[in-house]
Length: 617
Image (cartoon, rainbow, N blue to C red; front, side):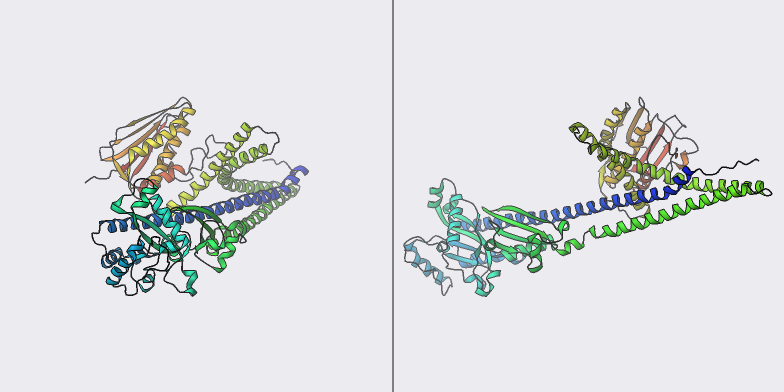
């Protein structure tokens, strides 16, 4: 067999020399892109995590206030229904509520009564008779206006008993709140106040607020303001220590990674009602922390007629749970991989160049040129076959992953053009988003299959009406079939049969089967989807098409991973060949079966899925 001497041209040498550097540049670019994507996703997840914690706290505060308001309404009902209200009955009623257990944060429940100047002596006599040895209305004034002293306050702890006899109308904040509640006929919260029951050294822990609910004679809360004032007999109220209130909110929501402040009205130091932490969290509220890794939020909340400002900020423990810290490691790993790939490529190009140079030199040898050339050809053929086997898989995957990136790069370049129309911008953004979804879907297919086969994924069990699942999937692909001019029909004879399983995973199976049917059916073709109960008592779905079909020799491998009837780089249909493999695994996890049938290439295919029906009692 004659040989021809083929030396590399200068152009080919330069191209081979540049190739490893192109590989390095491409790898670095993909590393930067992947690192940026990971970083932004981590920040987005942290933001969502922060907003979820804020939402839980906000919702818990609203629920607590609603619960306390309902508690006061129950107390008003007790007072109005009591034939002879006295200290013993009121104390027993409050004790039955078990405030410490069921209403954490409530200092106590009190009852105030409007007392005219003529009734003061009689009230003092009655209170002394009920066991209040040192009862008196304080602070003492000489005016002739009605007083609103605290008659009962329970639980009757030593601290709470100090409030008995205190004239609520004698203090400006309490008086204004009482008047607002009486005129409105509803519960009203007070502004920030200092509660009874603590010494002066504990003032910081003595801050709190009150919620007053008016009580009218004969329960008559109707009419205008004048009528309400005339029928007013007293108030039932709750006393809340702000620090205990907020501590209970934090405990219930497990929000220990964020700092919380509550301001009564404007965000001023003197309006600070309560806060969860001190010291190190101050910097978080001032916004001097770790730049984009710190989150803060100011939310307003209406609390029984008062406006509270809730300020939230992340603590260092929040950042410790973030994935952002992995960004540098991912980038360095990508750079190291890129350098290794560059070294391997450079070595391969150098080796190939050396081999070709050696072959050229051997060609010039007279005595052994024929034998050496034949050996060189055999070695080259063997190397090319090995390289082809390796490259086919890499080419298929890299082609599928690169195609969306090329489209994104192209449309990004268009977006940089000046004087671009709004229509073109919208089209470009839509194309970029579409290709990003395609890229994400391919990566998710690889990750999903890895999780499924390794057993790292769990099914969220539940009873599912299969007919509803089928109808939703059919409706989703009906529009895609119309766009491709494919006739998509259905026949659903189920009557509420249920199967046990994970709805999201089963939706993935239906999505893969419908997607394959639409993809491999030409325009003008037909697809039929039939769901029914089979003779063996299972829910059965058949999806048949008259599209590409499946070759007989490929049919046994149709559910194997990475298997495609056409694995060439120029194949007409894209994808990684994982959809049916994932579908089979999900069906098996639901104790079902899936099979494929086809008369051959170009004769369509039929996919049949069965799931056991949940037996009804």
